[in-house]
Length: 334
Ligand SMILES: [Zn+2]
Image 1 (cartoon, protein in one colour):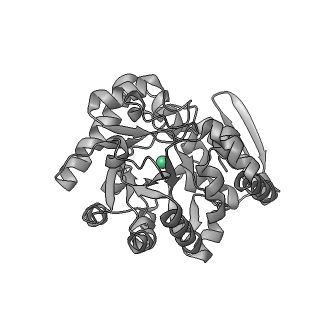
Image 2 (image 1 turned 60 degrees about the vertical axis):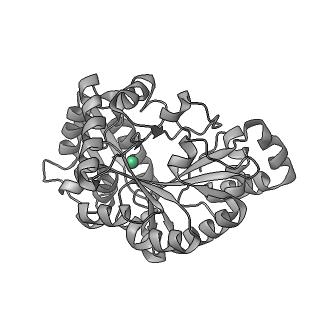
């Protein structure tokens, strides 16, 4: 159903009605968020997992469409105001630091000459590759129900169907995202039944691979904090450390400045004025959120740039509705 609704929604977005109404919230430039680009079989499995991928085929169609219809820019160009005043400007970004950005996305981006940024979670580069957004769906997959008590509250989650598993994942995710780092570690320990966490090294870029990506002139490496926790839930010294240490780590790894940041999760509840100010204090030149609102290209906005997500179901033809103001007007992020 979700899929049909999105097809209809972006169908209207492409129509003259969508295009005219979209003008109300249309921006000169858009930043698109990707996570993973996977071959079809792996991409199909992702839906029941974190749902963070697009297929290589869909990605190729999207880059082809963007190269034909937009000016694709680097983050530096966007932040410097070096944008086309006649055409739509688009910046491609990838969050977290997945290996497929190098193996599957890069060849496509090179083919179309599209600049892009990869925001790296730096603990992945030191071999600490736990990711609850993969681990929890894996845990739920093995069970028919989950019953646990945490902080005095009992949770009884039915897991009898894939929809029930998805609902349970969303419920647990909401709790995890309301926690600070210590609470989150505690809840995850309960959910794992005090077993060791699963790690996902094979999914993550290594330090060597980030250097390899960085050598490509199309690529900008940015920071995505050390631990990928919700910054707004951490105390100020922790938040500052997350920003500073990820920046310094990458600068030492790459031997040049790292000016750009993506706030983990990046919604209004996960990064706000305190985080924007800290990002500025630490010396970032730009920082991206996951808030879908018009991009105004003002100097103050550089540390709180809006973005549009590209998700599992996004097709090349849906990009029109994302880049003409329609999805921003309707606040749809699918
Ligand atoms: Zn992320």
